[in-house]
Amino acid sequence: MHKYQDLKIWQKGIDLVVNVYQATSEFPKEEKFGLTSQMRRSAVSIPSNIAEGAGRNSDNDFVRFLSIANGSSYELETQVIVANRLKLLSNESCEAVCGQLNEIQKMNYIFQQRLTNKN
Image 1: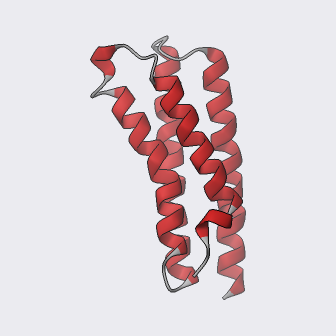
Image 2 (image 1 turned 60 degrees about the vertical axis):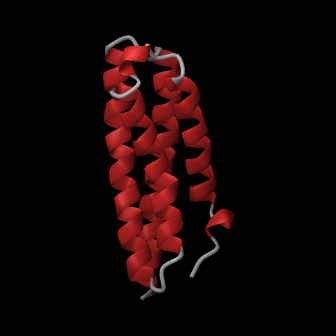
């Protein structure tokens, strides 16, 4: 079992959630149950799955939850690109969030490899 609050990848995931909430707060009200909700759920899913995996009893379980978090990161990246193309999200915000996502995706891959090779 890992202490998830000490994991840099979880901390960066929390920072990402805050940034996504701030970015989507400017979206039109008609997107409240559309893209706004979807992006926020995808963002929250990333650190949530990291935390859940950290609380499991085996590294194999942790790797599985890291994989789910990674899937959510790619889902969010797609939604960010859609929001940008719809002009709901500025190029600057899109690049910032995508930069955070790319960093988390790289960290996730390395972390999964480390846990897998440990066994």
